[in-house]
Image (tube, rainbow, N blue to C red; front, side, top):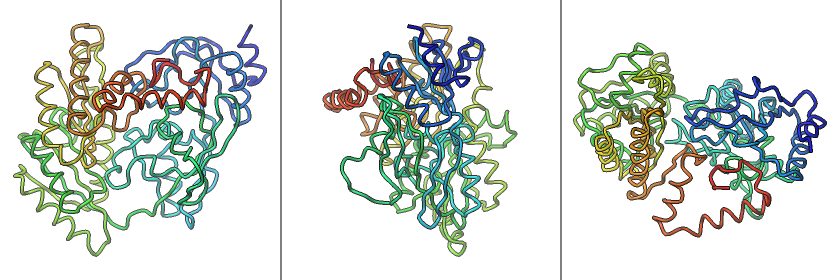
Length: 464
């Protein structure tokens, strides 16, 4: 059967079949190269998606949904003979209700665009991945994205009230609602968050919004050892201080930002700690000084405090652009930057960070360590030469050991980037190491209940 003809009858000109126009959909922000999709659908209504999904279910056509293409584990790339369904045209902010603290948005809305709109009302949407300029609401829900503000506000799952979803059989359902609490049966909304498009396609989201903080300030602290960075954060949180943002950067990352953005750092600093404190205008100075005194217990090379918004924005945007800046440090064009993403309890940070450094040395790799340190999230940006098999074997071994560090310290192999293609084996390893093998069977059963033919994002998270 000519499936392109069948799909074109549903989508008309909203179906891309020309090879040249399909090529950009083969990749996302990860280092994975996907297959050429059978076609790319650009629907503009939920009803159109519903018809497409019904057709795909009846004809066993595998489907992958795509948002902004910023996924870092290969979760949004097409595999063999897949249909890509792009949500690019679902880009409207439908409603904003400050009095009830929610907004209704379509999944293709970019996170920065949403916050620019909400700022007019004095509100914002807290999930804040570094790729927020391109990352979409739907994609961030599908991976349960975190980001810089997760220290205070948590990850995406904490900010989703309800969803409109097209199921694999084409049925259109709504989950949750517009209220801040409800206990009406199973929480299907939570089930969709982090499912990476394996259970359905999100077509609308009801998201919680929050008042913009009254006042904030920043502390920059520079250290000579990674253990001091971890100990500083552990002590800060132990004293009851929850930073708005708490980020750390290593020397490689600082050098890349110096080269690409012209920022200056102390030459003898090996690590930089960025701490933002949010408070009232009356108390912000006192709370910044209190936090600085705690950081000074661990003998930083230097510290500085600022409440200058322009200076804070400059550092904030530089940190969000760290991944792209690190590309400037590649030694060859065949190198890619593979991003490790683990999480451990804050109290385990000093040991986890020290062990991560030891593993970098063990495998003789170039790795930039940075991350959202307040919630224990460590990123290891590994310079991986995909043309050198021995080098890639060492990268894979490091990823395994890096994940084991997280498991051994009571954390997880994936903090905020999801599973996709990259972490399927690491997820199995985590469940085995924690004696939770049956959890995988439960997840498979849930998926089968939603998608008996296994057409949704096949090969991601699970083998089939």
